[in-house]
Image 1 (cartoon, helix red, strand yellow):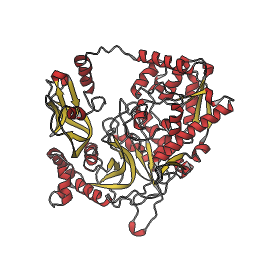
Image 2 (tube, helix red, strand yellow):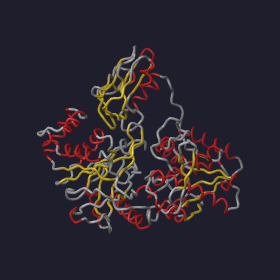
Image 3 (cartoon, one colour):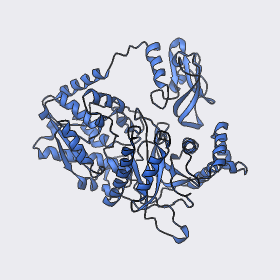
Image 4 (cartoon, helix red, strand yellow):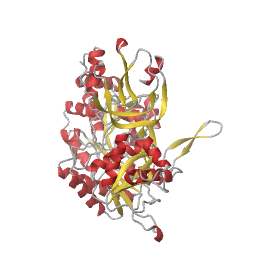
Length: 587
């Protein structure tokens, strides 16, 4: 929309206000693009730039407050939208796309999943010929559908299925993966490579003054705190282990293709040239590291699902006859629990920490703050609408809340760019009022762009938020603590019958030790757990489940109670954040 406006003589500018999240916009539903929609629609906006002067021949057809959210030139059949019609968070996005594709562009919609399945099989046959293919199977839907396609396209003896246990699997995961795949008639070789992963390294670029690219060897994985380095080491170690397997089978690496269940969102988030030459790196996926990219350039990688999204892979899995419990299984990332441990040696506290904390104090006690003028109060008012301020008044006069920064960082996506930044914690005197907390979780990152996530901290009000961290690395003890917390939470969710309502539920271990008296100088030695529920249909965007709505509150409270029994756990938190501004995973 911004480019179209500029090309036709309009102007675009960067405003101090940016929009990241779901908002109501007003539409001109006489415009062909919005025919059949309401005058007000809920959409996902993620932008920092806005249309200033509208191009000649165009009219404004959608607005978000005083920001232009849609333009159209009906005679030229040109339409621009500032929001995302392609995601499920835009409630009637499909209708907008349908209007555009069928009524405006005159498409017919005859391309089906069956067409795509036949195309995938044809591509595999042409590329592989009589060679062999090594497929890395995690047991998730993507790699299993990839293997099923390979088995359809090739002879069984051409496909070598390998499940690598990297030491970051959930409790009894590798065992159940092997059993599930055997039932499907897929013989899988299980390789226990935990030791190789814990001690894995990779080469990373460094630049000196002469701008000549040089390389350095990373720390070993069990001593690495950088999330990006963790992902790269894991991805490269997968390839090294795959090559070892090829060697053990007396095959020549140059005669074997590597197959993986890479999806389009993986490539977009990793900023792979396969998807886009202009995307920002949100996070490097383990299936798109430098080693994989090198193999791709050599034409040695088979990725039949690279143009698919998760929901489409599930449809394809059903077409291929895979059982429903496998097709609708919660996704589990290749790096597994390794990216669900927030590793840290020192707290993440930048120079904006005190000021942001003060803004959060004003927000959490807004009804009292408005009575005493403060320069930061003006900042809060400038970033919020009158409606927001009314809602804040109402919430803070009814509930006794406190909000504070936690000295750790997690990955977020704001304005389509990656941000690694703060987590905001909220605690309360009373029982949590979830609707109010969800409102604050939408509002806070919009006001403070250095906050990616908002969590609710269960238990009594947090009097002294932690300002330091418990040194945390990917050690076997740390991983077994998280594995147990993950097992308890998922067992309770499964037994409650609500697992199908939640698309994914990562459990995260953070290096935070609450409730220490600062006067006693007690060291930070415990850790805290986060429950991250995620509801989505497209796995590109999504929302956190609201306890009492999408999941019963007693189910969440039961998880909290069981996790609290695990030795060394300080507090349990609940991630309230949508994607964007947060991502599904914390790293």
